[in-house]
Length: 195
Image 1 (tube, rainbow, N blue to C red):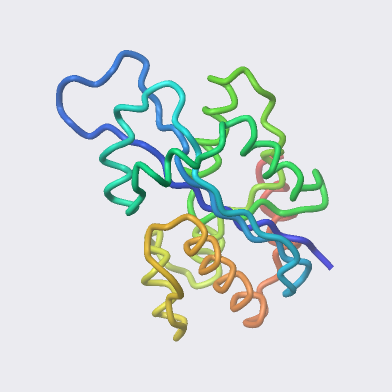
Image 2 (cartoon, rainbow, N blue to C red):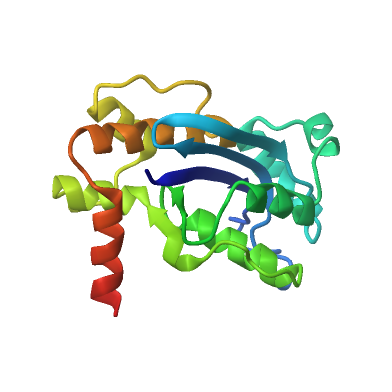
C-alpha cells in the first residue's frame, strides 16, 4: 500500500510594483502535513516557521493567512521544519503530494538559500491538481476549494491555513482513488513521458 505525505505551505510574497528587496524570494511561514498509509492518517505536522531573510515582508502574507505575531514567535526555524518534514518522508516509498507546483518550488528555494539539502526527491512529488485535471479532462488548473465542492464534499477548517489545506487535499486524493484513479500508475506514466 502506498504512503502519502500531503503537504501545504503558506509563504511570503511581494506584490508591490516598487520597493522589492534585492534578491527577495518567498519564505515558508507555515507548514501543514498529513501522512497517510493508504487511507489511515498515521502522522501530522502543523507549525509556524520563522522567516529568516525577509521578515518584514511576512506581514501581508500573515494577514492573508490569519497568522498573528504571537503565532510567528512560536514558529520553528526553517532547518527544524525541514527535519520534521523529512521524518515523515521515506524517499522512493512516500509520495509527496501538493495542490500545485508552488509548494515544492518554495521548499527547494528555501533549502538552496539556507544551504541545506532538499530531502524530498522530485520524482516522488505528485501535483494533485494536475493529476485531477488529467483524470477529469479539465483544461485549466482547478482551485482546491472549488474541487472540494465539485466532488460534493465540504471544505473542513479554514481556507488558506496550511494544515487545513493539506487535510482537504488529502480528502481529494482519497476521493480520486475511490473513483478509480491509480497514483502509482499515474506517476509511472508521468516519468515514462519525461524519460
